[in-house]
Length: 69
Image (tube, rainbow, N blue to C red; front, side, top):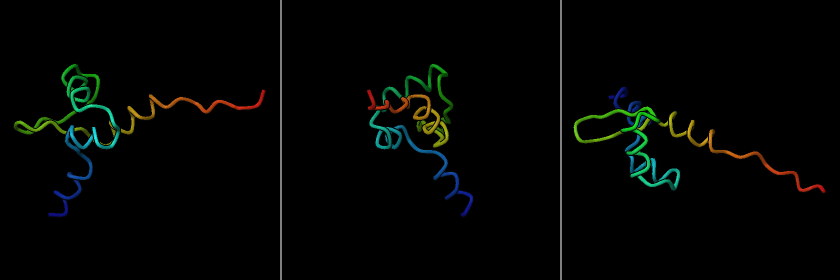
C-alpha cells in the first residue's frame, strides 16, 4: 500500500495539473497527446508526473527585472 501512495503523489490527473498551475486541463491534454510532455495513460485516465509539471513551470519562469534605473 505504501507503494500505491507514492505513485499517487508522483502522478496527478490533468484536473490536478490544472489546479496546481492555472493552465487548462485541455492544454495539458493537448501537450501530452502531441508528445510535448511526459504522461501516463491508465485506462481512460491521463496522468501527468509532478516532475513534468515542475519542468513546465521552470521553463516558463521569467527572470526578475531589476527596478534600478
